[in-house]
Image (cartoon, rainbow, N blue to C red; front, side, top):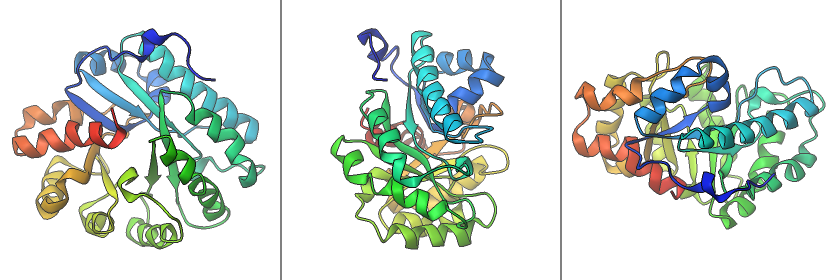
Length: 270
């Protein structure tokens, strides 16, 4: 599973922007032309785990293998990219056994292109979601020992309520909060997340966060600006909002530089 051939570990370009959360395996299948746009824009891409049509554990393992292989293939094509491995709450299948997750995920953490575990979290907070999330958070010591990070999902529906449930649940675990990002954050919940010491991911795309909302969030959370990461959450659709953000002249230059590149490089240790 560990990558071979050191050539793909070299940075193909100096990044101009960092998309800190996207789904390259899905994007490459549905929008292969987008990869050229990302390379042309010198985008550093972090691909989080979120499979489609996961009916059982075999599907899940096959998907995680495909995700890792996609990143290796795209590296060979000149895209500067890495990935996170893990079980998204919407990928919890009926036969998933939480106790088996360490043997599935830990070997993947030994891949130099794997920067940690994600996308994990809560979608509804019901059923087996908390047990599966706990099994992955229990790997935090192994993750942090490898100098890697944890990426956590918040849902589109009932976001504020579920995010607060998530924050309370995270308090049960010993986590280095400087190595944990809680994503799809909105201006309404950003303060609660940042005040607890976590990084906050902001998905700049239709239906999630607009450029003006991003500006508002950054202004409101100015003292935490070094822990805000901007992304597009690209997957089934290609969103070029982050690539176009510098030309929109909405964010102050320092804010733009930190949230769209510098913070991502520092958080992921790149």
